[in-house]
Length: 337
Length: 56
Image (cartoon, rainbow over all chains, first blue to last red):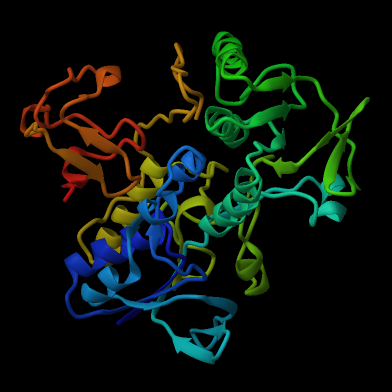
């Protein structure tokens, strides 16, 4: 049997390693657009206070997976799934190829969600959703540090990622203004009391927090970028952190059933019986997407055991919690996950 | 020169430093890795103690 996995995040890598441990014979191929190996997505939010982050974030180079007899094709895009032929089309800088599968695991994760009004300005702002994004941000920032300046940042979005990055940039000494559309920070995950505590922690670390902000547009002014709300303010760098969007495009193109994510049954199986989905892209029958490390890893390990014939019962979500990586912040109440 | 060691979570990269412990989860500074209860979880991502590796 040949199992092909698309994606090398926590879902794809956990599945590949577990399945290899359970089955020595089956072929496993991991196909990914990443270059550097498996890295810690949570650590992206500590990308400015850790000097060695670009190396230390990589927890497993691809060669380590290859040494476990997992075939890895990196720096490539999967452009199509041919369900009738049970194959995927792969495109890389120097090659095009077709790969046959018996089982296909889609674990492509999610991209940054860009609200429609911001889409025309994509050249004006950064996102922080991958190691490639982090490297671009760090390079931009280093330009200022080399001139003995600390950049002025605007961060649009006071959810988990926006608060974490605001905290890390401020702790690294930069000037940060955080724009949030709602009347309190991280309103989806935190109790009102904890939102107030988070506000205080961020303010104490030097972040200027602006709530109830309707950001309308961005304007390029020479080497500055302006954020227009009721007033207009200018910054050196702009980061949009407005949530995530599961990468469902490939599945849609292949005609799989999708909603917000790729629809799966309680066995994480899509509307095609040979194709499974894991992690951020998997939408369970209850409509939920489990976009946190613990349940994703749990899904991946479960699916490996299920496909290896060691589990019969369907997947059930584990009890889990999360924790915002904001310097100095400890929530009093449990997070809503 | 202390003999305290560091262990890293292989899933999210969290580092447990025996010298510092992890007071947030009730592990006092100076607690050796072997003395941490088996049901302790990574404070960042929640995976089990067995996912940690000794750092070189």
